[in-house]
Length: 358
Image 1 (cartoon, rainbow, N blue to C red):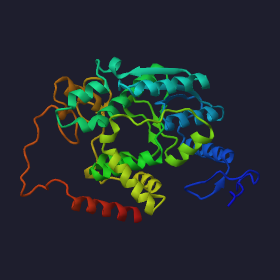
Image 2: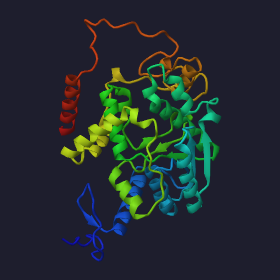
Image 3: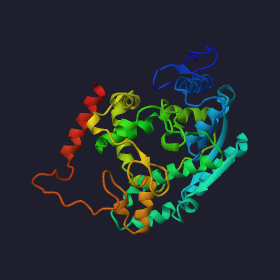
Image 4: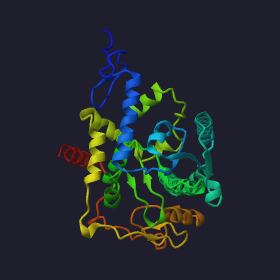
């Protein structure tokens, strides 16, 4: 059966049917529509004011590559200038190839590129060194948590280095939905309440951040990269298979099979969440060591590094734990809940499904 005509230009044959709307479009019309939607997201959300110097977090992967390409196309209409900022986490056999893709993109698009490295910013610590340090502590599965915190700090430092006024990252709707699910399953109400919106305004001297692709599905990001023939790095990080995010991703795929709009529903649900006054976290202050925004005496990055330096990474990671104090006392098995079982997972699954339905 021949492909239908494009429902936009009515001239070319349709190359795809949009997953969200079902609209049949040719490749050129799809790319035009995708760029128009990103432009609307930026303008409606007032994410990037005219004259902004924008640091694009460039990893070499599909999301950051599509983001950089789209913003380069839209820059004259937005009145912004772009700088690529890449982070070298120090992951052997992985990051070098990804950085090579970023350098090719920078040369092709004539965009300035700055690379900042964990080893230079964090006293010689790389992700490979972190993985070795946590291997016997029971925290080796948390490499992505360490990396996420340190990467955020490194991107902030790189953006300041190039004189940026704003930071943009390539998180898409699937990424954000996974984050919402992870925070929900961990019972992290504080992060759930902070996860809404298209970015942060830049409290406490931090640079404003935004996610222009937050309403775009991963499928459409891949399709845009395909039709624009973009060169990007597609291998998964060597530490990713052990991350908790993989379980949230699998759960999201199951939800999308039953409800195709599940990812966007989760994103929009996070925007509407609000905490009761008694449950709200205290207003953030300044880290006593580096001056960055922090909800405790030490910011997350300094707490993680402090634990690594002391050889006690377990004290430097976790929700609601005092980094400087002793570990909490053992729980009474008669009153405290035991380890998670399949029954617990089923209960959480039903909770999520009911939440999405409402």
